[in-house]
Amino acid sequence: MTTNTPAAAPCAPSCDAPSLPPVLVGALMRHHRRRAGLSQMKAGHIIETSASRISALETARTALTVSTAHALLDAYGTPAPEIRQALALLAHPGHQHRIQGFTPFPAWMDALIAGSRSVHVYSADPASLSLFSPAVPGHAPGAPGGRPSTPGRCRLVLLLSESLLNLAREGHPAAAHLSHLVRLAENGAISVHLVPGQLDTPAPLLAEYTYTVQGWKGSVTDRLRRQIFLAHQLGGAPGSVGNGDAAEAERQLLQQAARTARPLQWSLHQLRQAARAQQLDTAADGPRTACRPPISSPDTGTRRTA
Image (cartoon, rainbow, N blue to C red; front, side, top):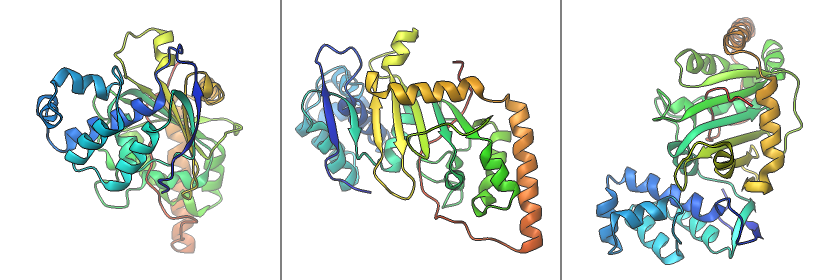
């Protein structure tokens, strides 16, 4: 995980989409405040302000300074690398909608999921199946495998390329995690829809968070302003995050995946068959070793209507 200052391109101040740095850092502040067991009123005492201003800072409705973010994150017990990355984001001047080199810690995904109405993830990389297998039984920060149920009102959707099922039937090592994915789908923790073919993705794993920053009116225009797209490069390589017009390519790709996605029950049936085939293959040949180590990341849940 790199904590170097990511590269970003400024946007016109008149843009009506929320600027990324205060949105991301506000989400992280709310996440760690809640983990610390502090109300917004108690958090306000730290910087001698009101609960309403803490709420406004967390939802990017008022300007967030580096010094204020540092004071609050430090008081919440936020790990130092996360604080450094948050302050680096806030150091960018102007209105930002595309940040390159952003490789978030699991806490960032947890924070975005907690504040989102929905999360959609598209993947066509076999290594992504390991994201659903918790490294520690019962919990894997940032991975839906660590969540017994969907958090609050957030809908979690996985749009999975059908090509991964073919790999599973052929005994690909990464398919060892497929059975766990089936259990998550059966328990309702996520909703999985298979996508025919393989889309031309900018990254092995692309996630869209419909984040409720600055309130929620429910209109299509309002929703578009609140979509945040994270492109994850597996293996620790730097990814990117974007919103507004800067994320149009990612938005169109996920919309295409949602339009062509197979029905839920049909997809689950195919997943069960692939998992069964993989288990039979493993039983015949002995246990296999995954091609890549598991990583922690965000992911998914219900089908979106394009």
